[in-house]
Image (cartoon, one colour):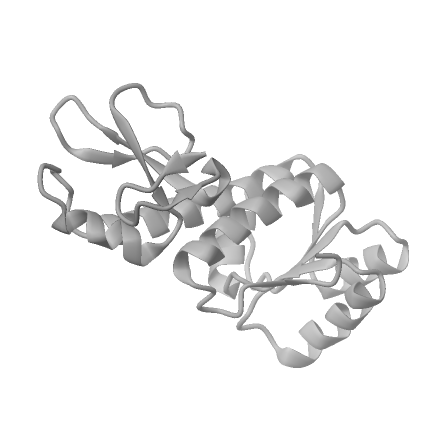
Length: 188
């Protein structure tokens, strides 16, 4: 449990972001929670991180809240890319559909700006199996994560990777306020 520097609310560190005061006095996000130095915590909310700029005694870079959003997004997308390189993600409607039929899916990823009919077909199959469906990312973001063109559907085939990806996606969605519909899960 840590105390949020902005709101004064005590919360579990899983629901917070850590910041470190660098040797030059500048506030630096520490999303991996590994940087040395004086640190403080803020609840995982864009608006609260933005309020750090108004606190006396802190040298906060401009647009820190936006910087944190980018860093959270990069962490989630990088993790998805690593899972793909590890062979734990299949891409494309046909391969995802086949994996769902063969019971080899732990979680489904669907671009929120992809064609609705394809998303609905795969989502209904995922719902029948009580699988988490993450719709927090765009086609462009999924293409970036997987190094492919026009990636709309992906299936995570490993439970451990699915849990880690879901954790990072949830962290980003919570921070941004679920701007794109976020995640839905029948099992939660």
